[in-house]
Image (cartoon, rainbow, N blue to C red):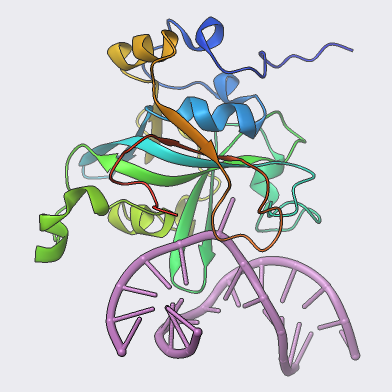
Length: 217
DNA sequence: TGAAGGATTTGT
DNA sequence: CAAATCCTTCAC
């Protein structure tokens, strides 16, 4: 019985040397391993007209099998089916009738798990920001619902792959930031997840320490 | 076929 | 703390 996945332990041995686009194989690990490794990586949003926005991931949460807070906890349904598939695809759902949330499907096929992207630092600001947003640019993508609104992400993008040239992409940490992480100097805080009624005690939320886009709670 | 409730955000 | 707002899930 050999497990084809890379080691579940995040860190230099696995993450080092990797640059550019994130391959599905890099995501083929438990969500609790992928979630902290995605901090400092970049989300890319591309539109058909060529417009592109890059953003640094600064807050994530992990959702795994056996986790009562995971949408796939009970069983496979039309909505959560993509979580049961191979890694590297988006799972986008509508919550409270008005906000969308973006997840990166992780782990191998048949193991329903995903990483919720909770906050981003936008490299370039989207157009049409109001005056309040212009004064607080680091809050524009602070929160899972807000970042989807800012990057025009909705369920039409669910089940689409993160890939070069696609509407959604993922890129490894810039080399200087990865070197910082390799030295163990990337300031990552691990704590409990937000807004859950079940599984609230699991410390499966990670964020870049002191980053202004991260939820306060 | 109906009803309850949710991995959110904002304003009172 | 409650509203906004609608889809998903589960019960009947």
